Length: 360
Ligand SMILES: *Cc1c(COP(=O)(O)O)cnc(C)c1O
Ligand code: SF4
Image 1 (cartoon, rainbow, N blue to C red):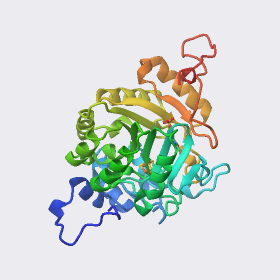
Image 2 (image 1 turned 90 degrees about the vertical axis):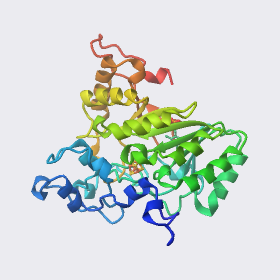
Image 3 (image 1 turned 30 degrees about the vertical axis):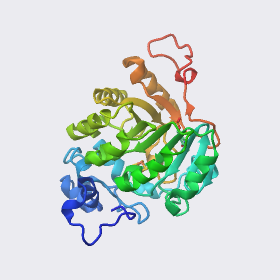
Image 4 (image 1 turned 180 degrees about the horizontal axis):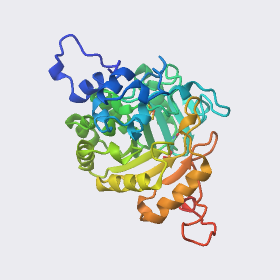
């Protein structure tokens, strides 16, 4: 449960928003997860209990979209700790994207022109095993300290910033009350024009898109952009579709998705094509397909760049251009995400194509 807004003694369970109840009831042990999925530990010889630092966590609504009895389910693979996490891999780091060098005040990362990213909370509704922030020092890097004062002061002073990105953790793990307070302060900074929210909550607990969220977001002066995080079409069920439709009722909103290319989850073109189609059917445009950020403990998810580029060629040949995400990689010190070029358009004559990098 969100530590910033503990339930007071006088609050009954009924007055707790449904999404917070779902968060509180998330599965937190591999044993419980395997029991719900009717899997025996022998079917998952490589599973381990997960460290104390980054324990298993997965809401029941997400588990409900996994296939029972399937040890290779692509949603299960995203959340189940495997023994490979303990293998040390050369070239994998604790801060692979150079975030700590980009921190200007605690929890404010200013890497790219015009955009500043706020680490609003360490909390997430789900613990994705491939997460690049799994080793992140949230205790030192949280913009919520002192009621956001330092971060707000920095944003006020730097007039080159016109977009604030709320990130985390998952910013929508914060209560609506707390978010509304932050948004009110951001709205008062005249040079800000856009508010972007990077969140996986509409996918993992779709009830998070509740009336109070729709109210503060709908009343915000800043143009809203929501970037959800979905990796596989099975993550999108009828409740998720409903939540995304609700978000679309907000005037001027832009809904985008980012995915991570993950071995054993979505590293085939049929899955990626189906994901783009499923997203578009609920009003979401594919934005980025990220190569894995090389955080220690995630090497078993890696898809090498050459295979990634080949997959990307395949989806590019099957989808309209607006449903092809940008294949990107984060490089420490770069001034934007690095876009990977296509090797060739599948079926073409092997000529090098400019790829999407020419357009961005
Ligand atoms: C990814 C990222 C952004 C946003 O980059 P876009 O290309 O605009 O999506 C901004 N700040 C930081 C620190 C980032 O990692
Ligand atoms: S929701 Fe995002 S920040 Fe949270 S664990 Fe998953 S990938 Fe990491």
